[in-house]
Image 1: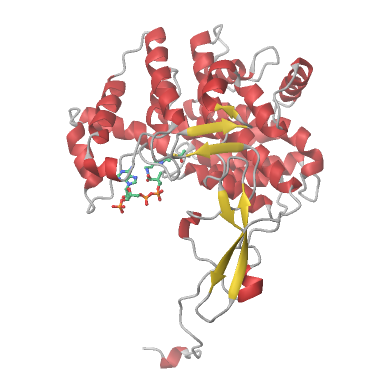
Image 2: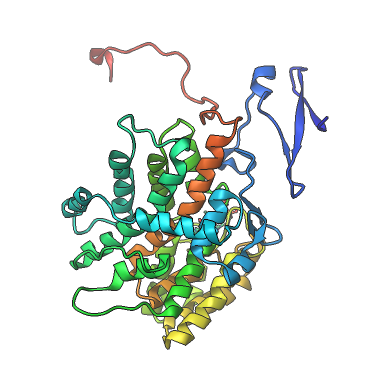
Length: 430
Ligand code: ACO
């Protein structure tokens, strides 16, 4: 028998709320029967206190700065694993043996081409289109090619559709870059690893040989691993909400991509770089920008700072910061924006405003500097985040579909508008 909490309401009703305990001893009040028993709902803007599901994929402890995928620490995965292996781990729940890994990798290579008709879609986007708009539209369009006529791409076909998504999103993303710079599309190649293949599709041209620098391949693997899942964040919750209506996996992932695009979420990585550039162009005066971020009359926020869950440090940011120094040194790149980022971080971390609110650099603060060093243009940064987050979205969609407790997501509200009013004919309105 679970422990229960007792809720006593002002009208004298009482409710018993079972206490749910997770494997890391996190505790929750189960309010799933509250409305049926009492007529009350809960109010929690931004879902700050609300657990939307029970999940065995990712654990994070915001106070201690812990992040684990399927129980394995992000530090260990970052050091020892590859992005594709992490994708397998997230989606299937265990590290693959060699045969499983080969099978997963082969199935992704097999599905890397997109239907030739889809190439023509690129011709019709404005040359000013943001790559995230193109990516979401293209992923949504996959539903038109790779699902049954009913639009279904359901849990029975997930292994197939997961491989298609992992493969085709990489192809779609690189094609959108090629389109934006007016270069011919470069087709995927089976013989290359996932990251090498992506870099080849991005940077090869038909006129010369291209071989990805192993330093760049490693850096890309690392960044994708660090972004691969982050439990019930805004885009993942979007994937789950959309999928809860039984929408197919392509439609659900396309919705997640759009949620990620927002500047308070994945779009922050592009905003961080633009901010660092702005500081650089303004002479490198970080104090002015810190003051602006603290000014309540200003809309300006320090992009790449703060996190809903991490309140001491973001372990991904710690790993990326170290990688930044390493990658830039190995590549012989001297980027003034890295110095500005470090100065800005040091300055903010000694400021009472940021200390009091527990605002620290998040995963996006340093990632853009590495992307820039490896040749990814700024407006593609959030696309790179999508590529990384994809296995997490697929894993969470799968877990939700397999969960017998899953119901269509349908929050309640507290209505604050007018009570019944009569319709006023046009002639009587002021
Ligand atoms: N710069 C300045 N002040 C900030 C910042 C920031 N980056 N972030 C939070 N604050 C302040 C808020 O103004 C608020 O101050 P107040 O208490 O005086 O009103 C306080 O800190 C709490 O902030 P909230 O917005 O309530 O925190 P919330 O948990 O809702 O938001 C978020 C978290 C969206 C990440 C926020 O910190 C932010 O906007 N950061 C900048 C954008 C960013 O980097 N996003 C990427 C997040 S990581 C990811 O999605 C992959």
